[in-house]
Length: 409
Ligand SMILES: Cc1cc2nc3c(=O)[nH]c(=O)nc-3n(C[C@H](O)[C@H](O)[C@H](O)COP(=O)(O)OP(=O)(O)OC[C@H]3O[C@@H](n4cnc5c(N)ncnc54)[C@H](O)[C@@H]3O)c2cc1C
Image (tube, helix red, strand yellow):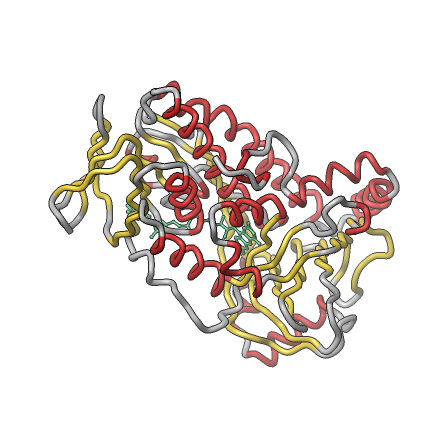
């Protein structure tokens, strides 16, 4: 590492939210350094490893606007319909459900499923190709948020000077904590089991979200006759199931998945993720902005965590671009507060909404089950209410940043 580097924006954390922020800021004309503790290219996995993301339509427009989508489009599977239902192990889905039908949208699609092995290398390559982005491996130890510049000291002894530091350092955000930003954190008593399966019958682009008593169980369409599963269980049950061999795991899976897609086989690796709710009280301090999971880690019930991070990146790039156009200091607190005002209420209310939904659905109480089944059936027949859910699924509700409408800055 050079002893001294200088840039407009230093992004700390090279996960997907950090990459989204780096590319959107660089496109807006800022010189960006992205620093990751693990080295941003370390996760360039070519093998299919079972992980995939639901990319909402508005996020797809964002990735297209910053030159990433062309690199993954051929590998993305459209989600044309979404079916939400209650269910029970060994019994399958209840007959009352909510159907978000592609024929009821203008766009004909709610989003796309993209495998991690395609999305991650695509963002890394886009950053490699961008003349305004410099990727580096390194760990920030301390940051001095001075009046004119922020000065980040690195573990290898180097320093980076920047007008603004963007913490994309994950759900505990050590950088945010060091700057005095407090957070509300809670570990869910649930783990997410993640894997992919092959099946005999085609999925026809339908995403299924089934609410089982121990938590949501999502079957999400991948390219070919394959689906990605995000399967929530209580911690003890998740540990037990994860420890099973593949055959026994498939038996458990089958009890929940059923046979509507014919015989299923495991593909790729199996993963288990502890689930957390983590909400930063503030998103900004002078010369510091929190973005992605660093600002808000949410339950994966609706597959929206990264979509929220992308929305942060798009909003921050728009705010900073407009501020720079007016000759303002992009690290100034008044500028950064515009980003916070745009994003904090939206993300916090979404996170708490998903938290409530998880509590409401993750139980086996007969009366509550009846209420939610009737509720889903009622929403299914109420066009205005249904539109709200359709917009949420597509990521086009609320004040949508330009990049998420497919416009350049
Ligand atoms: C089971 C499950 C399923 C999910 N499915 C979906 C989905 O379908 N769609 C969706 O939108 N979202 C989904 N999510 C959420 C999504 O995975 C996360 O929101 C997203 O990956 C967070 O990215 P991030 O870049 O904010 O953080 P991270 O990926 O945690 O990246 C943080 C980075 O910061 C680096 N770092 C930390 N400290 C330092 C330091 N001091 N110096 C340098 N670098 C540092 C780390 O090395 C790391 O690379 C899911 C989550 C789970 C658990």
